Image 1: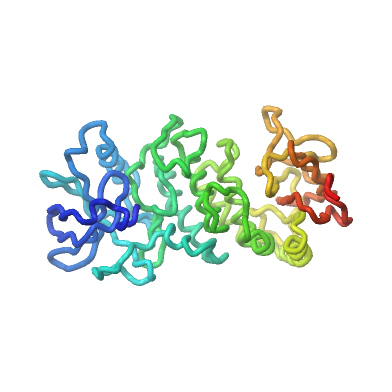
Image 2 (image 1 turned 180 degrees about the horizontal axis):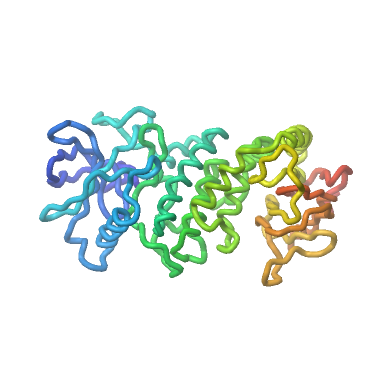
Amino acid sequence: MTPAADVPMAEVAPPEVPDFELIRCIGRGGFGAVWLASNRTTGRLRAVKVIPLESAAAGSPASREIVSLKHLEAHVGTEHPNLLSIHHVGRTAEHFFYVMDPADDVSGTAASADPGYRPATLEHRLDAGPLPAEECFGLTRQLLAGLSVLHAAGVVHRDVKPANCLFVGGELKVADFGLLAEASPLVSRLGTRRYMPADGRMDAKADVYAAGLVIYQMLTGQPVESFPSLGPRTPEIAGNPILRKLNRLSLRAAQPDPDQRFRDGGEMLRRLEASEAEPSRSKRRWLAWSACFAFTAVLVGVVVWRTFPRDQESSPEPAIPTWLEVNFLTEPYYNATIWLDGKPLLDAEQKPWLTPCTVPNVPSGEYHVVFRHAEQGELDAGRIDFGGVCEVEARWPAAPIRAGTEWKQAPGRP
């Protein structure tokens, strides 16, 4: 939803809507204006979206929003804590409208008729920078919970972004259903381009891709154009197991190849929730490694690597799996190939994997890991024991790098 300050209609006289007095325009979403309104009988505040019927002819953008609401009512309804509730849909001779819960004020208080009221969105919250780890985890869960309901009903949102995540009673609500449609493998270019995958398919994986970018923004405070660079928060993410899990989730969700993404919001949510139960042995091992390598990352900007058991395993002494899922990230240069024991990692089409990526089905074991970049040359990460789901993060620094247990000079550096 676009803020009211950017809405040309903000100074236009409000239209007539039955039972509601429209106070002022507070935003625009999809194909109409959103107004703060008061119920003439109860005085209760609501948000009312109004769309001129003259722009709702068959095939027009406004008519698509009407169709989207029909899909929402037929397949989903909105009685879910993480979907914005729609209480009434109606029309007048000139307008189509629907009545929703108003968002909280940006101050965190409830909506009010005060002239200073501004709807609270995730976009506004991110203006202050990245979110604390626990808040980031909680909002990720709420976002995915809302999307999972849509996907389970066979529909897709098609415009997942921070501006369409509102806060009502402190809870994140997925909002603006103007582009909602039945899931389809067909290509669609409706939505916000920055959050759309290159393949353009109108399926749940498109929402997963956008959700991955939203999580990335909460993690890093960076714009989506900077994905997957972790920016100034890299040391904190490397040293915080919650942020590390969310980074891994984001990387897989926003894979360029749709076959490497989560199937839908439900699968993504299950992976997130499974990651909460980490075995005690893993925690002890993580604390030991993070104390060493987080310090190294801050001072030297070098290779940082960690290993830990699969998220879904919760027994205290899990068996080491045969096949692993490994995240590879190189900074500040991307599109590096990955070599294990002198052999390139190849996908199902025998094409080399390029960083950043999540590589499935890597056999567990110890490997000599090397990154090769067309312009930056070779970066030797040393021998790494992939004893569980792994992450390898590497940086081309001017200072010495640590690979395995030995100090080495970065190739090609003095």
